[in-house]
Length: 104
Image (cartoon, rainbow, N blue to C red; front, side):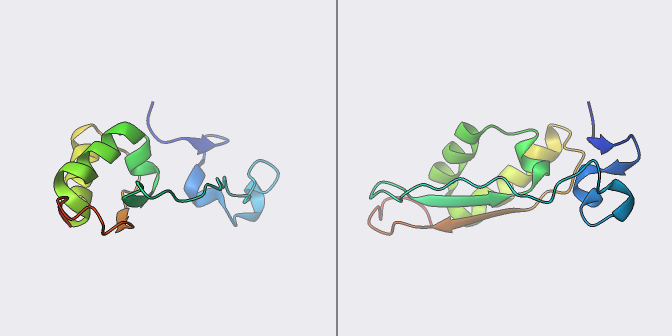
């Protein structure tokens, strides 16, 4: 396992913009479009360091239990505990303030 590398040389996230890796890497992002619903509470943006070790369902559970601020801190710690080998950045945005019983 570990960090995915292009040609065994450069970490995937570092390969964007590297001319020698251009034949092997595309800078085209993966994009998903989805309409927000009334019951959507958080939007989580994170780097590979989180997603390589923590599943979507776990992220949702942590944010719902701990809120955006404490949730992202705990998710970062969880990724480190599970051996994340890449940069870890986690941001959570509270979308729905109607659920006042949830932590902020």
